[in-house]
Amino acid sequence: GENHFDEGSVTQLSHALQCAQHAEIANSSAEMITACLLHDIGHLLNNDARQAIRNGEDAEHEQIAVDYLRSWFGPAVTSPIRWHVDAKRYLCATDNTYYSKLSRGSVRSLEVQGGPFNGDEVANFESQPYYREAVQLRRWDEASKSTSMATPSFDHFLNFVRQAQI
Figure 1 (cartoon, helix red, strand yellow):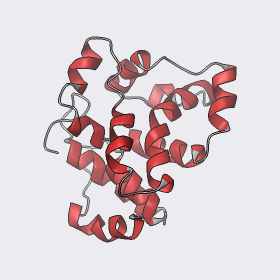
Figure 2: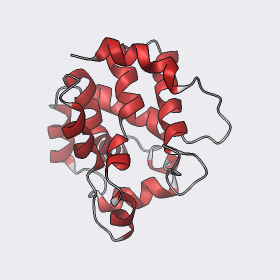
Figure 3: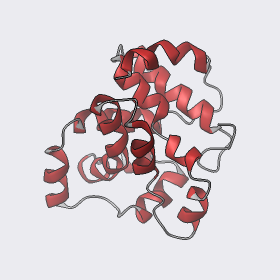
Figure 4: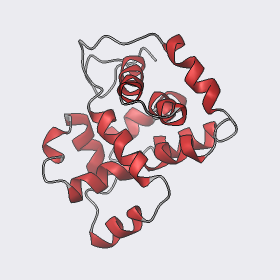
């Protein structure tokens, strides 16, 4: 978790804690807070993820995360994680201001992940269960790259994780 996130000075752990804190401040469910906390665990489980993006390949960290987490969590946790990359593509297609808010690393990974959705992809995404939660997770994801945001410790979020387990 101490690896740096998005080629910046924010660590994976800090990014996860910031994202979970955004969800907690918004009075989200334990499942949503847990999804925010664990949404990028696929990066930690796949040491080659960063190199894959540099090579122009999609490491599919979201699917790695879901495959790992589905033994402990139901779709209220795993679906927003599964769809958070597609949510970026969706937001780039449907929100005129979203692209300008992306970090440099998110812009680079967007291209590797297929770029903004077309009309059919937007409609298909909107038919997915938990797509709204994935979109919200994605917005918090982009807002969770601060080098100065104070967050609670990982242990603070463990009660939410326990509540979210199946």
